[in-house]
Length: 235
Ligand code: SAH
Image (cartoon, rainbow, N blue to C red):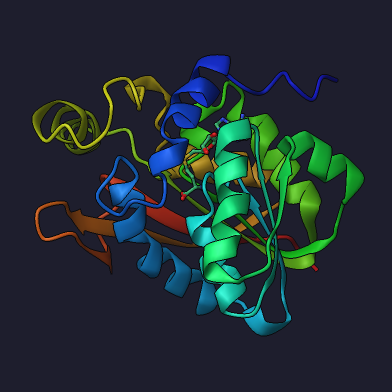
């Protein structure tokens, strides 16, 4: 077992480069800023955040971690980007919230705090790791029995290629080129299989609609581009 195995150094370097602008709503993290209220509401609708201990895996600069903490959750945010974790910590001075940010891999957190979290969130990370199955196994291990996993990622369809790569990286130049790799996108059926193999039960899949021009985001039945899911560890 190697805790560093399931990580691509290129990916970490790419995100670290964006760290200083992470909290700029008009910077490269702009889509994450725009999607954040919708995914926070999705989690809040399914978990009583006032009582919950939550892990945010691949937390980046902490957009979701802070939103969950603001709703009352006790949040541990982990990421392998040293600069993004620094920015996440710094931003707590501005928000006056408390989040336990750690430069730590998912396998380390799963090994040191197994069956600890009421909810685990892992948004827009799985499409960036070399071994998605190992990541899902780590996330499952962190959950208490009965706990819930929330993930979001990009589907592998012509529409997602058009929106996330051609549209966002080439036409609108909203994201740096090379941010996403189409072959690493996962279909909901493939996510379902990964979850089942990790002993989790898929409870819901919802499309995440986004209009980058109006900057509006909404839950939708269309999962062809970005989607959210929730799964549960049997009690
Ligand atoms: N979850 C956050 C950030 C998504 S960007 C949000 O949705 O707002 C993807 C993040 O995953 C980056 O911060 C990057 O540093 C991190 N990351 C990439 N590979 C990782 C890995 N193998 N383990 C942990 N974090 C990783």
